Image (cartoon, rainbow, N blue to C red; front, side):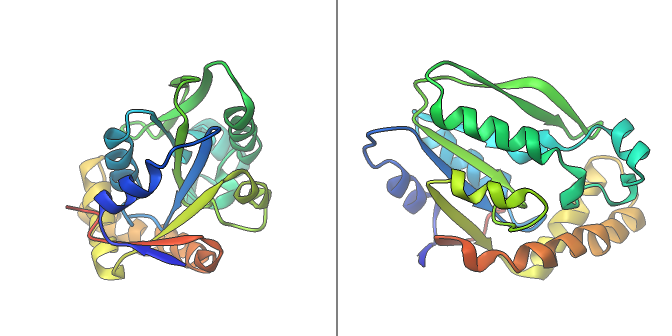
Length: 207
């Protein structure tokens, strides 16, 4: 398992010439820095596109109907079938693929918010459960040509999460309760999948 300690190393690694489209997964616990790292890499590679998993959250109305709203972010609060279908299309399509985005201010998926153009030959997928091997998520890893998992100090990760929850409207006590409750339960589940990754990313993703 290779280790990468800078975004520059990742960019160099992912800029290798390709004969076909490559789908790359970046996994990690909540607050690990997946979005920060994936966005930085995608900005640095002109032929790269970014596909966050967050767009495949179930809508709030569906979560309430299912009785899962109080643990939004758990594996079964995502539409894994739709996510897998998008990945399958990305791998084989020679036309633009539309994917869901996510609006954090209202915590809702946004249909067709992302367009992955056919000339984008590296698709960077980031999300919590890319390496999970149950609940339908086991279909994801085989669709990735390469996978990375982020290592980060838990204390740093939790403080990032608290700050993020506050930024999007939670009070400090509620933000900390969510970070140490549902988020931490998910983090433990994700940590158990780390050994399935091809590579490790070990850097200060908040910089």
